[in-house]
Amino acid sequence: MTSAPTPAPLTTDDDWWRSAVVYQVYVRSFADANSDGVGDLQGIRGRLPYLRDLGVDALWLTPFYTSPQVDAGYDVADYRDVDPLFGNLTDFDEMITDAHALGLRIIVDLVPNHTSSAHPWFAAALAAGPGSPERERYLFADGKGEQGELPPNDWESIFGGPAWTRVVDGQWYLHLFDPAQPDLNWRHPEVRAEFEDVLRFWLDRGVDGFRIDVAHGMIKAEGLPDVGFNSMTTGQRQSELLGKGRLPYFDQDEVHDIYRAWRPILDSYPGGRMAVAEAWAETPQRLARYIGPDELHQAFSFDFLDATWSADSFRKVIDTALAESTIVGAPTTWVLSNHDRQRHVTRYGDGEVGLRRARAAALLMFALPGCAYVYQGEELGLPEVLDLPDELRQDPAFRRTGESRDGCRVPIPWSGELAPYGFGPDGSELSWLPAPATWRALSVAAQTGTPGSTLELYRAALRIRGEHPALAGLAGITWLETEPGVLAFRRAAGDTELTCVVNLSGADVTVAGHGRPLVASADLTERGDGHVLPVDTTAWFERR
Image (cartoon, rainbow, N blue to C red; front, side, top):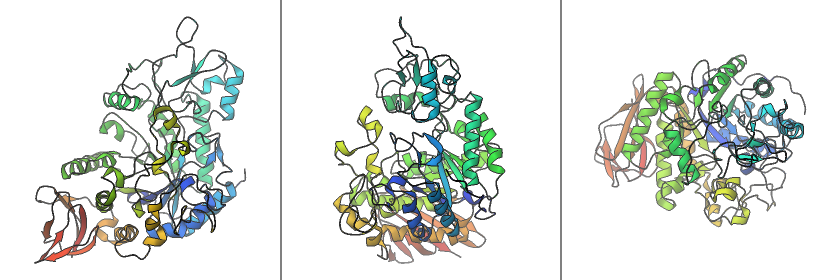
């Protein structure tokens, strides 16, 4: 490892995260600088001007730490170093320096619920044996049955199958995910001290924030009680039980003690260092507990991502999220896609219909107050890749459940007529997952400067969002009366109003009285003193 001087913060704006647009970089699929077919930190560094020109405020990087890569880096063996697959600490320092020079902040993924089984702590735990101090850092337990041959309880892995693996001396260890990801014991003071030091390590290198993976899972109920699983599909069963508040390994009250210890560390650094939780809770009220002046700055609201394509669904999700944000005094977060979920072009119907709806949903999201998270490639209108050969899939969940997240992780297309579309340097033909032939028309080069392209729509919308007085701040929304199936709300600043209208009615509608159009997800046609808004279209109008 190399040391680095503490860099100056990007600005003194401590509240930048309240209305930021954050671009999620899935590191291995963004840009490859060394022709090995895997994205890396220097690849990101070379594409920073593209992200500046797109109009985002910050980048969230998925894990790039030393890792066996069993779960794409979410199995960390060394939290203070860069995996050689992605570069080294010097590459990280150069990347963050360039990002700050371009006005971009860097948020890094922190994985505190579990380590890799290759982590030195876990190796020491296996070597030390039952009852040792080394095993106390993890969750080892004796099994049930006459010879301890049964798991300690009935908990199931998120990736399918039992959440326990037995070691050669007969004890079992807990892993809520893959067996290569043993869960840490967050009641152990060494674990808490270690991660507080990890926070400082990356803050000293200039990172502007952290995305906390499985932020709701670090504390398990005392005694590790049974849940009561049956033969239902694991994911479905766990979702139902979480909704009833019955999962003893999620959202335990003690988890908030961890974040109350982390917040002073973040606040001790200048420039508005922040943290956002990936947290699931049984009610909106319990999710809101993760946010506040003494805990974390944000928690992802996944309800927007899960909204069905209807005016009623979006209206309910938006109202609920804004009401919750008012209670906790923090902005909500809006998300349409991420590295764990099917891309929203495909969720909304795929093909032309899915793309029209995805473009409309993006304009709706960018018009809302709060922080918007953009998953890499959504600005290109990329669909899910559904036909990847099984032998190429690398998601560990696929091997256990048959379900795969690889389709949303295919490297994004930059240029050229043939795959991998400029993912690596000129002439490089390697890519860890293959891109389909249809993506040549969706590349950055193909869409740049092309009127009506999804990329140019995102650029225009983000430019307006950053400059328009009614969108630049945290002004709330006022819902307007509309015909069924149409959403319309207004945001205002002084004597300037911006109205967002979304047509989810299934037929073209005419809108009037909102002023001049600023941007629309599909072409508008003038009709009298108004405009025809096509089906599955969002438009912004301005009146001064």
